[in-house]
Structures are given as structure tokens and as C-alpha cells.
Image 1 (tube, rainbow, N blue to C red):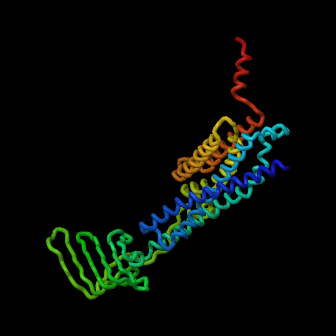
Image 2 (image 1 turned 120 degrees about the vertical axis):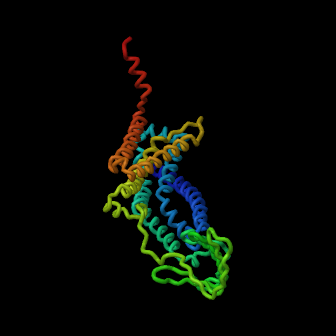
Length: 366
């Protein structure tokens, strides 16, 4: 049908424009956050773009769902304002008849959202976790940025290295300030290298000087050395324990702990919510030439925020064993679907609760 084709074309234009705008905003915000993590030593600066890419992949289900929701509300509201819906209704079609063209356009997007929530989301979180774990397990000499002070992994030492050597395990012009129980020390050396001894990492300083103060004692102990070694951390560890966010959906089903079920409720719930949002957009869309054009959009965004927060709230409740998994999923998404279909039926049949109540009161004898 020509009318269906025009709706799908307009939805495609609105969806594309909204997606580009949202992805630009999200990329900017995530880039700032990722750079902050890199500056605090949580992420390897050379992996910033990788972390940013994986993070954006994890947020794509939300971005796609919101883009589809906004495009549907904007398109249907525009049709009301331009009296195109009057033509649709005059042709003997009701509001329910718009579900078919909406689904014909949005089913690929809904399929992508479900796939990314169930498959890509845990994969991207796992990749980010591996990058951060790999960076945190590097030696302190490797993590130091040349010309900048850097804390060690356990926070008890501060390093400064003028690392102009091409080898990662060797640094030149090293400054080390250490705080140990009962004493503090400041050590400087011409060169330093990292060695692995009995599973622990040691930094070996060469040709330097050490100043040491002991709590409760006066004076400073000064010593020169040709070679001095200090333990800076444990050796490479095994792969870190994966959080529920980084576990695959099959792994969550195989180990139905409260935390895993909470994460599973978020993934399944978001796949269902993407479909419910499409029906909510149809129920909320209306148009009035005398009203502001952004009124429906603000109401739609408000509904999106409430529904999205309820999904997150359910995840925390299930993880803390305050709500059963199946009960919350059915209650939340089932109620939203039922209320939305009831609103669509009332608008489709032009049923007015207020008029019905007035008619009922008028029929009651005095």
C-alpha cells in the first residue's frame, strides 16, 4: 500500500537522523569518560579507542531502541498535525491498522536490539574487562608514563621515570617514594629494570641513593648503592573472575544465581521492551496544531526513562533476591503490554472513559 510505503520511508529518515544525533552525543560522553579513566591509570592510553569502541557496542541496544521510539513518535505526531491521520481514518482504517507498517519497518531493528542485548553486550564487557585486567597486571615500571608521577598498583609507592629506553622493562633516571609500615623512604637511581623472582615482581635499581626515615626515631639514614631491589607486586595472575555483565547468556542460564538472574532479566527485558516501546509510541502519538510540537516528544522521553529505570530496578531487586526472576519479568513487561494495548483499543474504538462515566451517571434515576 502506498500509505504504508510512505510511513516506512519517513520512519527510515527519522530513525537515521535520530540515530546519528544520539550516537554522536553518546560517543562524546563516553570519550570524555574513557579519557578520564586513562588519566587515572585505569585504562592503557593506547587502548582508549578500543575501550571506546567496545563501550559503544554495549550501549547500542539502548541507542537503537531510543532512536526507533523517537522516530515513531515524531512521524506519527507529524501525521496527526498534517491531517494525514484524518485521511487514514476516513478510509475505514483504525489506529490498530498502523501496527503492521510499523512492524514491517522496525522488525530488523528489533532483531538487532535483541541480538546485541543477548550476545554483543556480554562480549563487549568481557573485552573491556580483559583490556583493563591486562593493563593492571603490567609492572609498575611499564605503567609509568615518562615525565609523570604514577602510583603503584597497591598505592604504597610513587614512581617517576624518565623512560627513554626502547625496552619496556627498563627505565632511566628513576625516582621512587615508598611508604611501608613504620618507615618511609625516597630512592633515586640512574637506571632500573624489572625482574620476576619466585612469582613476584622486583624492580632492580642501579647506581643510586636511598633516604630512609623510621617512625619514632630522629634523623635520616642515607645510603648509596650500586644495586638495590624492592618488591613491587605479584607476577601475572590468571584470568580474572568474570562479572555477570561479562558472562554469556548461556552461562547465566547454566548458573542461575541471583546476580546472574538479575543480569539475565536486564538482557531479556530490554529485548521485550524494544517491542513495547513501539506500541507505546503508537499509543502516545497525537497531534494538535495549537499545541507545542515537542509536547508528545517530552512525554515519550518521560515514558522511556520510567520504563528503562524499572528494568534497571528489577535487575537490582532480582540480584538481591527481593523479587523472583519470572514474576518480575512477567509483571513489568506484561503490565506495560496490557496497558498499552488497552490504550490503543480505547483510541482505536474512540472509547472515552470520561464520557462513559457521564453517560452512566445520567442513566441513574434520582
